[in-house]
Length: 69
Image (cartoon, rainbow, N blue to C red; front, side, top):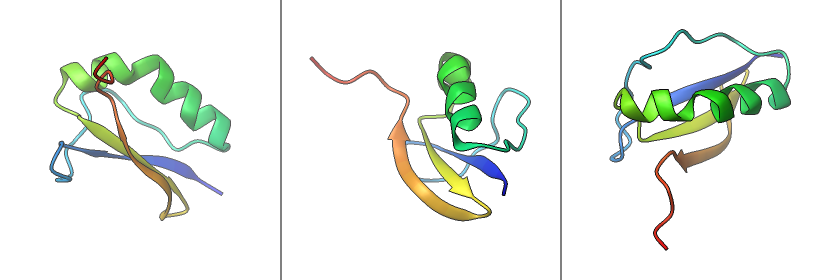
């Protein structure tokens, strides 16, 4: 199994991430990685991500923007 992220703008268009990306062997590894790099992704033009397992969407879109208070 390969876990990967799909990177998008706020309107759902795919974009290339501003950081090196890899495939992950577990969902937890993939989620930890995005938790560590979300700020760099956001600063590089990524607004939201989708988690994929072997090309099938598991969840998303998940916004990288802070929720309004």
